[in-house]
Length: 404
Image (tube, rainbow, N blue to C red; front, side, top):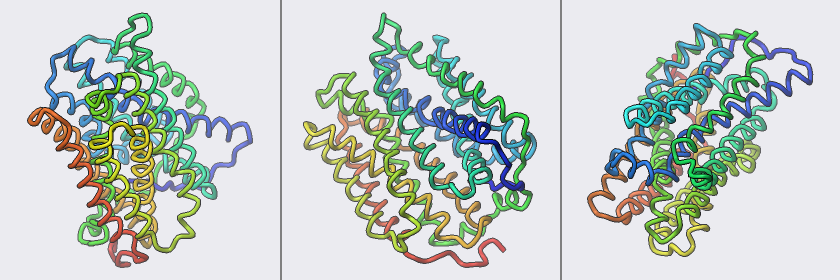
């Protein structure tokens, strides 16, 4: 769901523009790492609270459920409070959720994770609106920048959290909570933007509630492409360290590879976004990327010695399919209102589908005692991504009267 703003781009000095760009980068730094940082220490959390695999999977599922349920709330919040204050509230929620991890309580861990998810959902919805307003001629560059920031901060944190937890016996709780220091810096950097109070247009707020796109086959193809890609991606984000540890890797190495997976998922933003406008047909590209992801999932199972190759390639393919799916929302629609409605549909259903992934993977591991079924499930989901990516990648558009 992307809200386009009513106001024209604000005239800024070079200094104020630099502060805004810095603020965007710091907000982006908070939109992945607080959730994905759980995975490398998940085994320690399981031992601390005697969690079942399904209960552990719920920790990474809660934010996804929050994404799906809280995304429409972001539109209403922006309407009442303005875009800048809403993003500030998102940072506050993320900070509170991170701080709650200092409390040695399983219910607080779940509650704090859900609060983080709500904050991230608000940021995910509203940050593209800010970019569209203030950088209308540099949307691709700024989008690449914040996607790359998400990947770098998320990947670096995942790689460092095990050494951090072991440093002077700090423990996983303090290691998780300390990311709140960066959130605090982000809040401070964002403070100059609070003097603005920009609201989204009424017609686009209304378009969020439009259900005409739900009757479009192409809309379902794009939604399932994004949803299935997120399904296997969040299984990997949640369980890749555990899969690697079971395959004989150390916890520190597994955390580093999960970090590499996340950084690699951001790299396609640099390559694909500037090229998408020149590609009239994305069928073959999307299909090949998804099939490569399927191959890598099976590679983790049958050739674990090459885990570094599989992890990095999986991350790249996951990020590339995600960016292609997002681009289809614009390329396959006729106007901003139709794109907004399709984005809302894809985000709601996509995150709900993704939310089931970590729980299903945990349940399958609990039942079978290994990760074989889960990795085959990831390969199957990626193969379906290839099918829907081929269909969604055709050079066609939805019917012109879908939002009339």
